[in-house]
Image 1: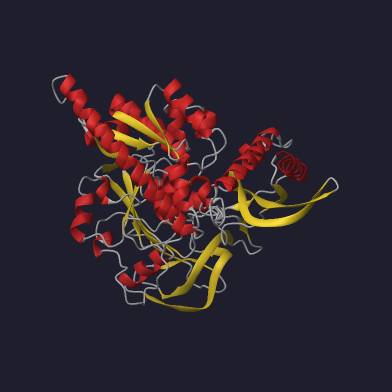
Image 2 (image 1 turned 30 degrees about the vertical axis):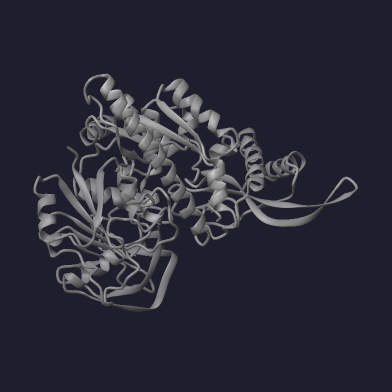
Length: 547
């Protein structure tokens, strides 16, 4: 059994980044809603494995009318507590301090001075001033401030505009930070969280993906028993790792359904079948549903509507396959004279934490919805299957580590993310077969050249140097000149970003020579495209995908 850190989620869009940083320190943690009951908390801590609690940020203010407060039991368990941003505010208010609106909001980079050499910040700094003050370069995102420390607390950090940017009660091991150590913009943020988790909480660093396999396998077997599982295999990293893990646990009880919705990448269907049938010897049903999906998407331009249609049609396809598998299961059991293996009663999905976060699908439903994902809550009850999501609590980097540990090929596991709705969200406006055909050919050229171009300073190719890269189809035409003739063809945009967490991302500064080669090849090889652009926006304010 793992020692654990509990993260109480007040609805911040970056709550799961806290969990990710802690997992990177190889400490197990769980995220639960901020409004868990007193009894739940006492029960959660009863086995002695709970070593610390972290209170997340929020879009709310402590003085608004809401119930975004932690249970007072949090402060009665005798274990360390760290409040981050709003978490610091609610800690201050609940323990007798005061919070008020700030006359100067802080959103972005800030330099924070550390005070009093607390256990949390001792020896952690980015630079020192001429007066010897230790300084941290951090990321702020707040419009309120603590105006009066709670009894027993001392000042731990400050900025020019925020006199109380950190507070500490060292006797009770309670700490509050105004800034966000979980985001990569806070340079020493990981060190601060590791200090809290490993040193102050004393948690054991035993959360390792290679060791996790046996735990996950046992959990899947306990959940599923002798029942059948049907999994929607997309060929992406998440569904592939989920399939490999479930197959490791229950073997032929798993049936993968690979749906070709007409919105896949070039030759993707054949590659999926070769891997899972040819090499893993898994049961895979390939369904050609391109006509069904494209027919339903005809005339639809709104991105949310497209996502919902694609999710709905997946449900219809799975309904049909589930019925077929149930019927076949009954026949097979009669033939073997006994229900040794039950028919498919589970639907497995490769849902991971970021899907849940950006859908506003965290357990407390407090987060603001950015976009919906058909993998999260997109399957209605009438499907008639129970939901199995073995990767739901894992981040992308953990999923990749798990895939390698399961023996999947490195090039598959470290493939760039591909959205569940496929090219449907990378075609702006209405989705047409013509557009999808043009896009998948242009995208294949872009990806091929990213693999071909090597950065001399690092020795890595640009596919490995980018976190996600793809091509977007723009439903506009522009005038061009080819040879001596005039063209009036479509425009595509190239998108490549670099990120460590996919919550924030910077556009990749690809070499001009690479962009020139890609543009030339697309225009010359893909008839129907005469303009290629490059997206130089970061997240935020943009998202990684277009839509």
